[in-house]
Length: 318
Ligand code: UD2
Image 1 (cartoon, rainbow, N blue to C red):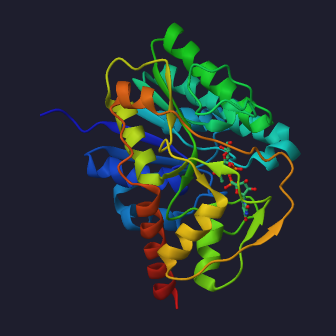
Image 2: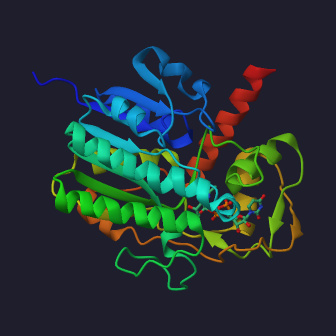
């Protein structure tokens, strides 16, 4: 019998990382989490706390990353400052976390003999270029520091796979949603905010006319893509879109969330946010063909699961 593979998840106490930790445990992995608990929360790991090794520290701290990577076969690098507008305000800080942090992870992976690094990249690498759907063969054109940091990280991954024998896979996430995405910040994902408001009976705000659309993808699909990226042979050095391949406008989203929550949801409209892109849609052909990625949870099903989760959580808290 072979020993259990060992995984490190940076940002493993966060929204996506904590779901990934649960899945990897189910798949028989030994799981270690590196998280500075800035946006990550130990509560996100409550159900699996006894099975997960938690190392509290920062990806900017190279010796600490080195320590956290010890004995690992695979690293899932999810730790990041995820807000695009924040990166516009504080580009040095987001550079240090999002790009230097990735370089630190890659250096430790090389030194410690990690077989593969799977990286949480972003649709932000495509920027404003209007061609839809987005394909990985298109030239990247990030507009904000966040997208630049994600793109530069991805280029480092390519170099690591070419030069140092560390296998790397970059997953370009589109608009991920699901349980544990925090609705509290002004920059939170729109679905987390709208579901929160629908269940509180308060009115959501749409910035713009609501015709802008996104490729929303439920977190379980993203976790599946990560698992495939870690285990498929012959994919080193590749980048993959991770979306559903379906577009949903904000106006349509309002109706869908209202339906899932059993209410009629109407919004107030305010001017579009500065720097917002109008459209984002993934072509997921490459991920399907090379990783075997099929988004099993539709946006409707994901919304139903999220609403049920938030209701349960609130019933438990009261
Ligand atoms: C997402 C990612 C970001 C980056 C980017 C790449 C999230 C939270 N952010 O940014 O990390 O990868 O994609 O392009 O997933 N909106 C409202 N009302 C609200 C909140 C938002 O109308 O209360 C609008 C917002 O103006 C935008 C759309 O909803 O048009 C989506 O906004 P978002 O913040 O959920 O995600 P996005 O696409 O800006």
